Length: 250
Ligand SMILES: NC(=O)c1ccc[n+]([C@@H]2O[C@H](COP(=O)([O-])OP(=O)(O)OC[C@H]3O[C@@H](n4cnc5c(N)ncnc54)[C@H](OP(=O)(O)O)[C@@H]3O)[C@@H](O)[C@H]2O)c1
Image (cartoon, rainbow, N blue to C red; front, top):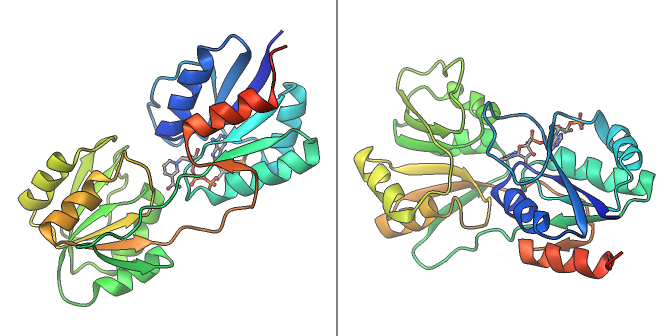
């Protein structure tokens, strides 16, 4: 007999957590992806893909699969699924633990500005043409069409299709982690003046932040959305410890 565990994934940490738990015979782990990327990364555990149909759908899945505990290891900006997870836990009675990465903290030399939305970032860029590096999801790029005066460098996991209706945009497709030295080379090569990014936290996408600091480049960070208050750990190791404590050997 094993403890069935569900991981809500879509992040590098969720993948690492799945890898760690898959080595422990105490758990039978399933990982869930929203299905946003065309060719998702390989995982060490069975993967299901697609939405559940809201909190009620997720609660029904937890009950049908006899899940002992589930982990919200989605991205800190994926607010809807995190809210659904909290509600599904209440509906089903299946305990939830969230992996909540700490945000990056400002350090000496950082030239950061915070905005509460992507539209706020577009306004902050101003009227004069600038060289802007956008590291946002495809869905968040559309507001930049209102500022066609800038020269954009846009990086995403999948191609941006259709491309933005702006005259100057270079598209890169790549998946992290990104090293500081490579990010510095990219920023210099494209003479980037300002980066617009999310405060994702963690190491996989911190390279651009460190490189921007070293090069004196401005960074516009979009504030995190509010997330529900649930039991949480900041690291993958913290989640593993929590599960080991909450789900003793059968
Ligand atoms: N937002 C970001 O910046 C970002 C960055 C990197 C990776 N991701 C990953 O991409 C996925 C989608 O992000 P999002 O911003 O679209 O989320 P979202 O706005 O919070 O979720 C939208 C809907 O997508 C479905 N969904 C999201 N994550 C899911 C998962 N892991 N498994 C099954 N269904 C899921 C749910 O549909 P139903 O209501 O039908 O269940 C949810 O209501 C997440 O897994 C997240 O970790 C997001």
